[in-house]
Image (cartoon, rainbow, N blue to C red; front, side):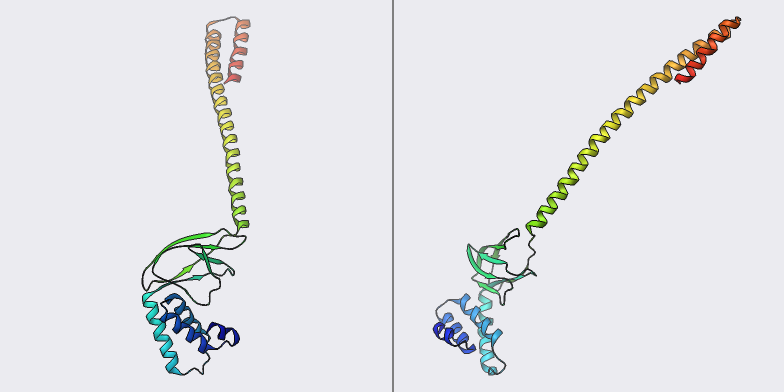
Length: 213
């Protein structure tokens, strides 16, 4: 049948291949060819044949599982348990026997995505996939580095300003204290003397203390 299909791509041959594969116990391949038949068959196919193929596929789907990718990105390689099985866009689901699988999605220039699947009978999944480009990863990393560096500079400047502010505050406090003491002493001296010369000297000391304050 495969040799015949290579010579003459008839929808009937796809259906025959699906039937033979089912008889051989190769269920996942059989489901694939029934999908191909139902997808590509012309409108002139007799309803009885369409019903038969639909019923056969329905029975296989109850026993099997499948995965189908939903993505806007074309050419994503689908690898399941180390075997390349398909690329996007998928025309039909990829059928699998129930079990555990590791699926790797990759495309050149993008970060690969790895999924671990535990599939049961009748478990048919549509998986939405968005791969991130390496260029976008680099852009994000550069932006992150810029933000981190900017924060580091701000911390250094902030700490420097804080230290300078603390030093100024301490200095101001000291000067205020010194000015207050000197001013008080000068005022006491001014009040206790009757000498005009001494009073002038104490007035100068008061003005000096006011300057410190």
